Length: 205
Image: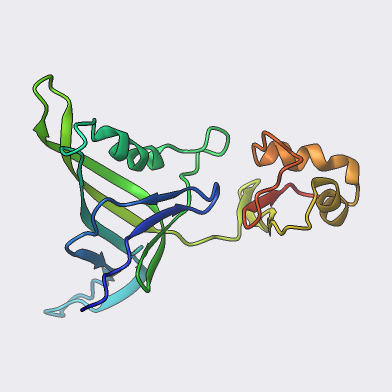
């Protein structure tokens, strides 16, 4: 008997939340390319082509959700996926995700999620949906803008089981009493509980 393919997962790398798809996609598509510029040279029939920059890779697929047998609202499943479009309230940055299916993984953000509902209960409750999603590859950029110039970005620290906010404040900021600055920069509701594996932004020293 052939081994069954592992269910695809969408993991929020910031919160650690895992969203398992109901059915693996039948196919997915990865688009990749370059932006090119033509150099106009008088007298030439064809202009020379110059590389400008690479385009961000995108991953697109259709995900299917069906709750007809349970007679429940399928939006209880699709809304969890659509919420990944919402940016963080302080940074306005989208959540960084990891799409995993078997041995394939793609670090990304959710750029688009189009919902199509195709079956309903007698009261109008949708029980079947197809969500067309587009994930855009995420690449960390180590710079910030300061007075019109590019300068080094604030440090990022990945939390371990032994970390504490005062300890991080002492190591990075030189003062354990500045732990509140780290908590505020990362919207930590409970500074005594640091989720292991979460990246923290460390304010400038």
